[in-house]
Image (spheres, rainbow, N blue to C red):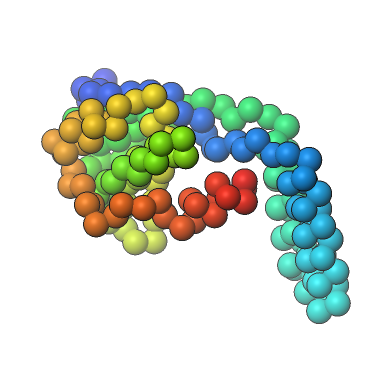
Length: 160
């Protein structure tokens, strides 16, 4: 959380990672895909790929068994806080809000450092217009971005 000198304008709890509802059909398809990729890795003698597949499978199964811990997200006068991490506005390039009723309502931050991945924060029941008006006091909005990033769409579609 931010230090005591930062005035928090808005805050809400968010899960540390997105947890998807996966059906039995999803697991059957995932297991079949896993088996085919494992066969491919052995026929091509790509054992590192096989190891990566096994680790990814273990991570997905372990994450599915536990609820993600809740962490606090806050917009302050000096930056944004996500759990114990704090990002000054000077390190952020812009923000945009993706809102699609019954699909997703997410606040995205783009960093000035291009190596750093974008930060997506679910808005849940927060009013996107209120969040936007508070952020506009400190940061520019990227109005050219109207859609959800492709990586987020794939993650939601494939339930990863």
